[in-house]
Image 1 (cartoon, rainbow, N blue to C red):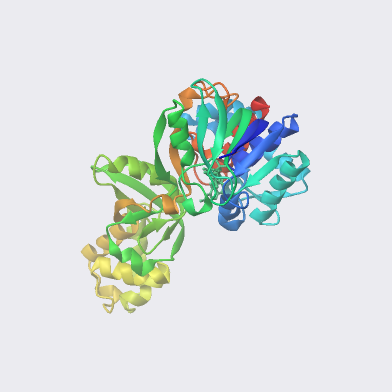
Image 2: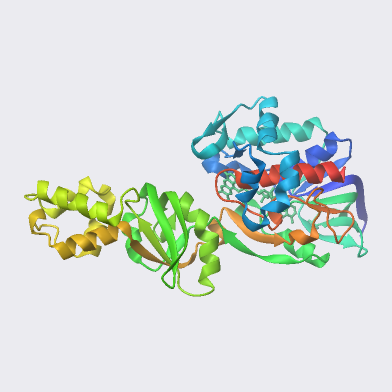
Length: 422
Ligand SMILES: Cc1cc2nc3c(=O)[nH]c(=O)nc-3n(C[C@H](O)[C@H](O)[C@H](O)COP(=O)(O)OP(=O)(O)OC[C@H]3O[C@@H](n4cnc5c(N)ncnc54)[C@H](O)[C@@H]3O)c2cc1C
């Protein structure tokens, strides 16, 4: 069988945000670059980010504060964020004639509200710098002599000539994680990195909806609550708490605050049962809420209990709270006993659910875990194990909360890998 070998300065594997940034940047600095993408188009996952609007970065100027948001492994990002941080990203897109805007909580989106426009900027950047893109090129492995990679092998397609190998001086691995595998992120890069001598921190789904044992959530599915506090509780100890927006689904909980604690739920679950407590009235203490109820009950004494509840709860929640409280909905408010009122206060301040795993990689926004950061130079993204290998994006063992942090990792690490590989 004939062997087709093509040679480049830099080969980038994976055409997501990290790979597109790395490839364009390396080419901008003069390298002859090939970008290998197994799909027939680039940035399939990028297109679904931010519900199709793409929360592309944060409006955050303080580097230390920004780094702290990425948790323990955040310090790995110091150098790449200092070199190409959120402000640089915003300028990059603005210079490419894509105006951006900052929304609630410092989330940055294109003014057009279209992730497609973000992808278009990246495609133009690749084109301008003459990056060769090979679509439909599924990489199946590396050729290496132990210290250096010689080439990457493409999957042999029936009916096409020979085994195709792409040779390059440097390789940048940007195959992403395992979440939303239908977009192409099937975690292929982890095994290659492992075969090349790297350690992989076990990939787990993160920013992922949580399943609950309680099935009543199904009755309130679709209900979004804007200002709630959720607490993670294990062995009667509060392990974490967050304030913000959440959503009930047919199998459990989702929405920003839930996604942000999901990784911790997974970690805690390894040690036993995890309870999730929802405070529906976080602005009031239990005593203040009880006082308010006593006042309300006095003013609404003639109403049926069920007819009073819309003053207290979203309509969709009423039947569930009635069921959980055990209070007769047709009872006059004046007849609600002190014990029943206390039970109601307790439900509103501490609505308990029990975590029953997560929705898994299919619905995880990101993958936590990946290439061990100790084995990667944090300034250059170069492997400390294989001379001519670099990493960028989600394949690395660093991740952030919702709100534009994860794409910022891709832009910064992609920019660094492209710069230093070139
Ligand atoms: C629903 C959803 C919404 C999100 N919203 C946001 C948001 O608003 N803001 C934010 O910051 N982050 C968001 N994220 C996270 C963000 O999309 C990811 O962090 C980011 O896409 C990771 O980029 P990447 O380039 O590292 O990998 P990916 O985007 O996963 O790209 C990897 C590429 O590699 C290719 N590839 C894989 N294996 C091979 C192979 N064997 N051969 C060749 N090519 C291969 C894949 O086809 C894919 O194109 C969201 C994620 C999801 C799922």
